[in-house]
Picture 1 (cartoon, rainbow, N blue to C red):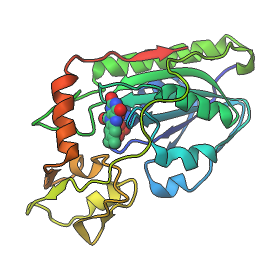
Picture 2 (picture 1 turned 120 degrees about the horizontal axis):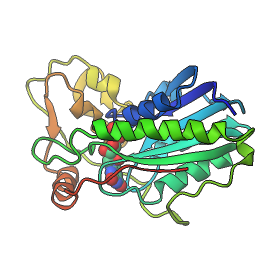
Picture 3 (picture 1 turned 120 degrees about the vertical axis):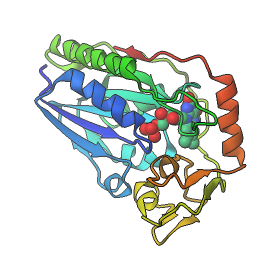
Picture 4 (picture 1 turned 45 degrees about the vertical axis):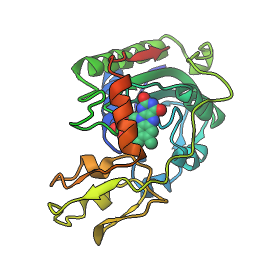
Length: 266
Ligand SMILES: Cc1cc2nc3c(=O)[nH]c(=O)nc-3n(C[C@H](O)[C@H](O)[C@H](O)COP(=O)(O)O)c2cc1C
């Protein structure tokens, strides 16, 4: 089948999953590309319906070895009928555990036919100058890999009349899934006097945890520790204070120094 239209859905608080996903989509070279940014809470309210002649690409970061639990609602509202689907997980150089299998199973349960899966490396959400982890990734080489993956997906789809003719996609992972879906409830963000109350932190927060009128007021129960507000602050006024998040970032910096390589499965 010829891929005419791609629906590209990504959850990407710090932008790495989006960059990988766009690299893969570029390589597929479909005539039409619709992006669905499910990082935005209002977008996650709208269910998506996919047709059989579209290609759905879903890219998510790995949180605690799993697909982020806050996406379950949107994923389980997805409607598809034999829509070919590409599953992409982006992880911070530790491990992606069973998350790619989890994403594949979820999309298959919604009526998609998973045709390809990829696991890419993105700068760790907790990474900073003091404890860099996978800093700058995806890098140029990762994006070339993503582009080549896209091309291979196109060739795979072109080789059959219908995705239903393809053999079942095999990706690494086991049932029951490992990892954890419960994230920390933790007060870990320090805001210093460079803060100009510009409100960008509240805008980029994917879960509405930052008060737009007072950027130092963070709802710990809502916060998913994605670090978007820290990394995107134009004044560099936000940082991590002593907390389990800071300890984790130090641990990751000490343990996961060897750069992992992206992988794809067709
Ligand atoms: C709460 C949380 C849990 C994470 N768990 C993992 C993990 O289990 N393995 C890993 O390698 N990276 C993990 N990461 C790092 C992210 O997967 C990685 O930085 C990803 O590139 C972020 O994607 P984004 O830029 O699209 O937000 C975690 C990040 C957060 C915020």
